[in-house]
Length: 240
Length: 325
Image (cartoon, rainbow over all chains, first blue to last red; front, side, top):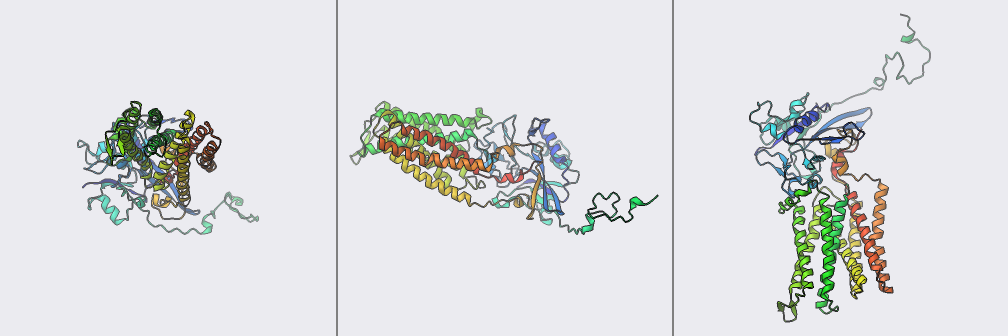
């Protein structure tokens, strides 16, 4: 059985939000739209997104790393949002494993959002129905598109190729190989939801910072020089 | 979680309605067993009509929780998997049974159809009351399981949730039955009052144990399991949006820890000791107004209790929405 999914490489995601904007652009005008923003120019803007890039700082200064973390619906193999839906609007497609919401059946009770530990579902404030990532179901099932274009909008937009897309049940697919060979993992494995989307861990980078690297030696304006200046000749005093 | 007043009123009003109906039927059963004097049919009929009114208002409140209330009829479809569907089915069944029970009493349909062991004459009211009792308990379980079945809302994922919904509903219903009896000058007020005190004490035991369990709760998910980075120091710097979102509004109550503690202490006082003291005082001085006051205060306390129930639950998705910047 096919299970389509995204595999996101945290090594190369630079947090540019190209996936966020291309997702919004494609889906707001497509099958799942509109995805309206409220108060876009006011103090408290809000709106519906299928995909967000969040940023985490790992470690303590100066040994920190910034992790840009794109998150959308993970299309779980055991989706907790599906059995709780009282109308059957929330469902998992049998042919490709994508979890979808039937917007004509959804009553907006928010129970599926409560039942998702990942916060992947957002209620559309205009249509009052639950929305979430569709893996661009209208693109990937459109046989009139070329093979290159039959991919989710976020995958096509990613400038660093941090997003891989394919069938995680096919052992020879690009995503399965990446998961197998590069230690792909799932989010919150403790809940048994078996997310189809995987993440590729950051590779180990060892960094040694010697104290004098934190202050520039060649520091003509002494901007970062916290030591006491004792009057010796500096670059400033050189007559050119 | 963000406490929605539609759901707070839904769960508390349904609980009081089910409890009042069960109180009426308990009174009838005791009368059949000759432990209590038999009441006029009108007493049971009016009591169960009040219960029906509470159920109707509760159902009305539930619509305010829906984004698309005009499609609410669809929500009975998935009864095989969804406790919400099961609640949606059992509630109208219970309403019909409570209504029929009331009508059967009003119409004096009390001629026995057949008798068991030649002592217990089974009439329409007894059968309807029995079916209504089953439906009431099924509804208590369904309503509570909507919350108790979400396993990663660990504050809710406990048998205590089911016990609390049941005992608190029964306690408020029997207190209301005592208030109703006192108001119309019926002698059953001390019978309902005694049961109200017993059930309130049972609810106190269950809710107290639930509070203690949740105070010791250690959450399974951490920011490390949420993003899969195994480092002891992980701090969120941005959540992918400059303002709020559905996720920041729906899953956090937005109140300070002091306010949440204040609500907890308020409900612990309003739901348990004050109604018990008022009912005991009403028994001693034979007051007809104190039981009414007891119900009003206990119901206000139950609103605070349900608010705290929601506010206390910490959803793991909040790990992804900790810092806006």
